[in-house]
Length: 274
Image (cartoon, rainbow, N blue to C red; front, side):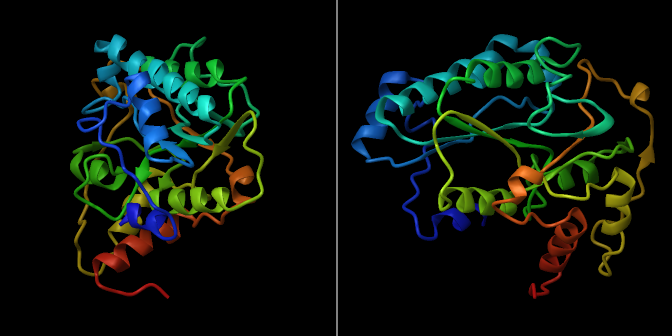
């Protein structure tokens, strides 16, 4: 569904790495040239399965997929003057002293006590400061596909133990809407440009669970065990924070998290959106 949103009005070529190894610099350059690519959206990267702890084990692979490969993609795009949008992560901040803007220096990045995953994401931003690239920071992706293992909603319905934090999240259809709005705007594509693409009014985990349990068909029926971070067996520290999406909102109105949840609940129950 989300891919359809960007295919309206555009010819979208979704490149599968099994078909075209876009980590191969020369091959990727040929793909751009042979297909007349007018804009690249890089969604690839290392997230780790089942979670970011995997990056602590596979550091070399994490660095390759989150730093080396995106740099090669950016260089190839520069070679042909092709605009580049890179989907990244806002997990380079931690804490609730403020809602973090694009201007704030990361406090959970390459120079801090953080996860290796977060270090790799911050490293890419640091290495592309003089390149023509638009970096979209997203957090805790949410989508309609409730069986998708990368979907935040799928995760919290599967976990027996939950921790109550307020974190920014990104509704994938709104991310696609923002990208479309950015592409059709008169924004400059020269230099590095960063956007926090998150839905406003972020909810705590308990607030999310409370709304999901309001579903009249009782689909979610969640009764989790609430624990503290110290009770969870994890290897890497976690990012918990709220991002300020004011800059991105100038191009596209992201729905509030409450609106997003009811959109998903209503669609699941066959209720058409107004």
